[in-house]
Amino acid sequence: MLLERLKHIIEQGEGTRTEFKESRSKLPKNLFESICAMLNRDGGDIVLGVNDSGVVTGVDKMKVEELKSNLITLSNNANKLEPPFILFPQEYEIGDETVIHIQVPASSQMHKSAGYIFDRSSDGDFKIPEPQLIADIYNRKRNHYSEGTIYPFVQLSDFNSELFMRARKLIRGNNQNHPWLSLSDEHLLQKAGLWKKDYATGKEGYTLAAILLFGKDETIQQILPHYKIDALVRKDNVERYDDRLYCTTNLIDAYDELMDFVEKHLSDPFFLEGTQRRSLRGIIFREIIVNMIVHREYTNAQPATFIIYRDRVETENANNPHGEGVISPIDFSPFPKNPSIAKFFMQLGRFDELGSGILNVNKYIKAYSGKDNPQFIEGATFKTIIPIPVRRVDNGGTSGANEGAIEGAIEGAIEGLTGGVKNRLITLVAKTYSNPGIKSTELQEVLNVSERTITSDINRLGDFIEYRGSKKTGGYFLKDTIKQILDSTNTE
Image 1 (spheres, helix red, strand yellow):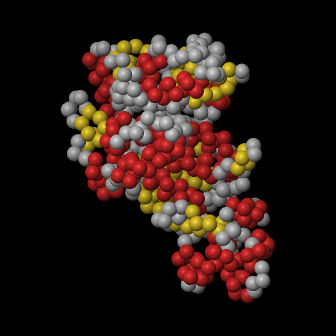
Image 2: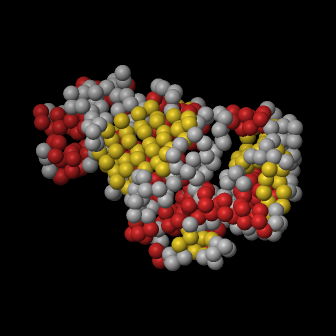
Image 3: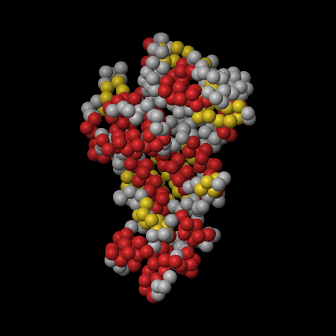
């Protein structure tokens, strides 16, 4: 969460989705009652270090890390939350004081704390012992969150075992002390809320969320034959496409394939934040892709689309709306459409918290595209429209670079060469610049040479060209040093 939005939440005061708690050196006794109530209702924000009147009283700076660590551990403890729901608090500085923000999403499951079910209203948290009220919460969640649909005949053998190893590696990179790391595959799925029991029908088993995250491709296609993500480039051929990625795999791999597609087709202008180089393309489209994945209504047959035009990227996916119209980056409340999937992607380090996509895109879009009007539109489908940098167009209809600029940039590699070899190397760099992620086979066809010659040329240009991405979707890219030089000669 951006600090500006946290301040806005504090200014708005407490409500059904906002709770303040004073907490200098230890977690409040009733903290997990509030967490449980928000999980069962519509989610919300808890801020430690703020009193009921909205005055920032702060958390002891020497205790912040201990409190955050305890909260993470206890949120994974069935004695505090049943079923567990791991949370990741963030610290912020407001004036001279430190506060801890806990984002609590709405859950697709019903939770207990210390054996009791809690719900929430504008008056705060309250126990609900009445069977009818408990049934109302249960039925509301079952009808609203299709990711929790149980498939009792799905077995552990229907999941891709390699994905569990990859998931643990990503989780460890995000938090080397994560409590899930020591769990077996089966227990990991249970702790992540991807296995459940329906007490109304007696059914129990793995959920649709589990299948989408870890299922073998054939398992996913048998259960959701309509599931697909269609990524297109329509810069030149706007009626059909210039390039296409047709993605029908699990959500963990789908994220990587889409990010490779973005890296292949979208530029990444040089940007420093302070003294650190940041990838604006990575920051922005990481959020856009995660948003498509975690907020999509998967039981709807409409395919998700990711389309790159010359001046913008548009995405659209089926939605279970919680509102209507364009979303404001300041005054909005994030509602996860698939809480279990969102929670798992958070553990993988794929995004920071709910709502971070809208906030980060708005924060960095001006530096990336020169424009500041990204749109997030809620409705029966969820749409995003993201402006991108527009490059100069050469005679071939693709982003081009000046031949003289290329020759100067790779002067060392072509020193002493004349005629065909020199021209071929310049053309190879030009084609890689205008077609990021180009394949070896494509270069062979363009230059009309053998694979051996292309390999030799690329080795000669090793200071300027590199291979990125997976074997399936990767290709050759210019290194940042030369790309920045050519970008500077090729802006409008």
